[in-house]
Length: 259
Ligand SMILES: [Fe+2]
Image 1: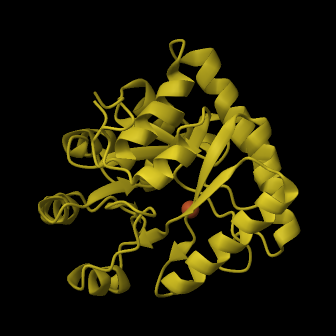
Image 2: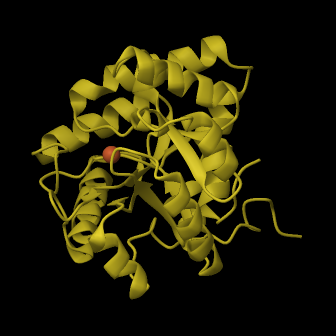
């Protein structure tokens, strides 16, 4: 009889790595020199150490994929992930690092989508998607349907950033069975503007956002992630940190939408 974890569609080699206890971050800019994340390996290591102190055991590196800003090639992301992983191994650190990307809703993404080359979380058909300012509910829900037909599961980054979308939470709620909405911990902790903070807290409290991410860009960001975690533990039912930062991310990596 397979264990719950073994029954997920995650490749077994990776499963062995993830199975260790700890939070799983599905959105981070931890690799150096690829985007607006850290510029040195030393800072990447400081971020990893800080995340480890907060209880993370697995980080998915998701550098930007935006035609207008940063679009490192998949080979570079994989190479950079391997470099950080090797450095951590040499240092004796236990943090597991996997590759991914933060795919912006732009022509680059749609070119990749046509060729079935969207950069997903390593070894899965789940990918991180960033919207360009608005949620674009109509187009998004049509496209989500297409992606789901093709076996992809989109994970939508930082719902609270789309605050200028009319009826944002209602629209997200309508799509919450076909995609996974996430909020950034820093917004829960009180950073990023009053409206964004309110939206993030409501989205999580109402169960619309079912995964929480760091979206960490540098070591100075660690304190915001920590504040968000503190807010979760103080304001949500007991065990919500495990649910939103471990159990639900595991489901998402296996291609399922958490309920
Ligand atoms: Fe990001």
